[in-house]
Image (cartoon, rainbow, N blue to C red; front, top):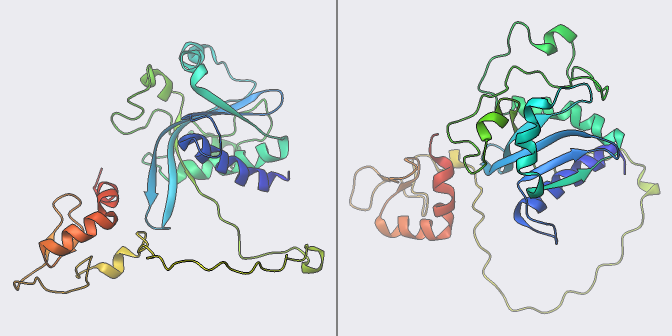
Length: 265
C-alpha cells in the first residue's frame, strides 16, 4: 500500500502486538525491516496517556540501523532477546516516511540538548539521509533515559547506549480529503437498527482537565460539603473532591487508572 497508509497500518500493528489483539503475537520488541534488511528495532517500555491530545502513545527506546553501521558492539545484546521480537516488513516508500517521522517522535519526549556537532546541523536537513547506507537520526539523545527504563530487559544498559527515546502516537484519519468524491465507492445503504435494551453509557474518562480546575471532579461542586476548600487526591495531588463519597465514585469510574498517569515523574 502507499507509504503514508503503511505507516498507519504499522502503528496499528505495533499496538496490536503490544496487547496481543487481532490474533497477533504479544511482543514488546518490534523489528522494522524491508524485504532485504533491518533499519531499526523498537523496545517498548510502556504505554502512556497523552493527556494534551486525549489519546495514547507508546514510550519506547529505538535503535536506528543503516547498512553502513558497525553493529559489532550490539550483536550480543540484540541476539539475547531475538526470540521475543516480531518483525514488521515495509516497502521502501513506507521506510522513507518512517525516516522522516522518527526524528519528530524523538523530539516529542526530548530531555536532552542537541550538541554543536549534531549530525542534523552538519547535514543541514532532517532526516540526515534516506539512503539505506547512511545514518538518518542524530546521536545526540543516545543513552538519555529515565532511571529503571526497560528494567525488565537484560543488558538494557548496554542497549540504551545505542538507542534514543521516542514517543509513538496513534494516528487518526484526517478530516481533509483531497480525493475526488466521484471516484469513491458509494456507501452501502444503512442497515435497519435492531431493537436493543437501553444501556448505561459510561462517562468518557479522557476529558479536559483544565475544565475541572477548582471543582469537585465528580459532581462539580466548588466548596467542600463541610465548608472550606476541596480535598486533594493523595496520589496525583491534582484531583479535587467535595466529599469522601464523591472521591470513591470517581475512583471507581476510572480515576484509579488515571491517577498514576498524573503523578510527576
